[in-house]
Length: 390
Image (cartoon, rainbow, N blue to C red):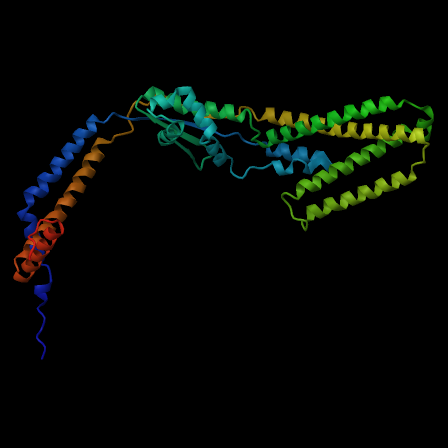
């Protein structure tokens, strides 16, 4: 028969653990207390850090105005389609604030390399990221928390972030109206150059009364405007490919409209009477002039509408709370430092006394004592301190 195992010999008694705690009670109480008081004293030596906060609302896009503009644009409605609609404006402005352009502007403005005692601007950027926390809330507001040992400088730094963001936005097209204005501004410039060239070519060809009789001005203008509409529709389809599939109903409808315009254009060209050699040259140049003139008028109209929408957006950045020098320090939090230090040292000492008691109990047995002795001898030989046996 097998002998019953004495469970009491294999288990650690709670009374034994309590006895260890009582035997080392002075160490477990005074040790954490002294460490907590020392941490509290050190916390008084650490220079206080102040945090200033500013909040602002990013620009709100005029979506209703944009929709009305695109509706009135007709064939040109898809030209600016790819440039409209921001997925998350707040996150985009947070990215602007964290950009290298804004950071370098602040470093140069406040000479942060000297203030942070850094040799390279890259290190100053990392230090600036630590001292400036930029977040966007569910309320749509963006908060900038700037920390520094000087409360006045902390407020200046937080407000400077907003100012530098304004400078960055002044040279970027961010809002929907700004993007439309920039798009039509480029198209207007290109069309203006072509219009001037077409006008000069028309003047160089001369005016022939027979040509005007053969090809009335109204018919030539209508044909030129139809050609301009076809060009606009082709540009619209090209832009729609950036955000729609060819199986989309809107894309198919645009293709149908373009096909109808081309059919109408072919009929108008076939119905036009043939002109003589000299007259044909004049008609072609006159038609090109009216074509560029029509495009210029369309782009000029939409450019002005985009400028009006941009001005209606008001201030680019609307500051809700301007940062002011904080009256209370943000850190160090002396009470929390002392409490955490006391708890950490108390846990470490408690673990220490348990491990020490376990080693003492292990040494009390002959078998364990012999193993520890051999381990010490092997360790001394590994260090070259043991005796070399022949």
